[in-house]
Length: 124
Image (cartoon, rainbow, N blue to C red; front, top):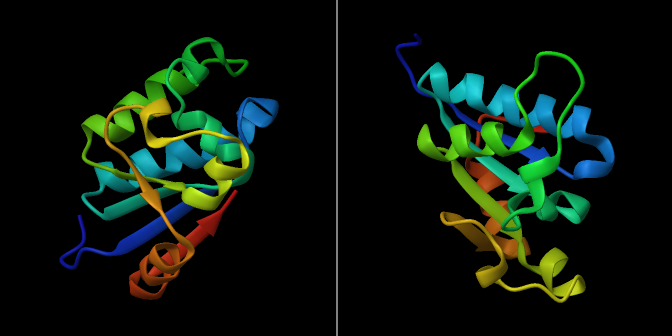
């Protein structure tokens, strides 16, 4: 493990329509947490659906990869910070009560501050 903790942001803009890309994003975020880095996962656009209660329950990726539901649960249990884009959920007539426990709303200002304070950002 590194002597210095890094702040890494993983931004996911896809949902079940591209389960492979979403699972890569969340899987990498989990790996960052396993390395004891400070990891935030930001869901934007269609990606906000990944945090919706029940949405990821039946989305499976081909092969031996864990289903999205497990990847998301692992992310939360490992202490990851999960942000959902407030304008994105408003566009979809959703509210914070539609999302899994631990999800936080983030405005454009909040997201920009997270990005400015981070060391690395990856967008999927």
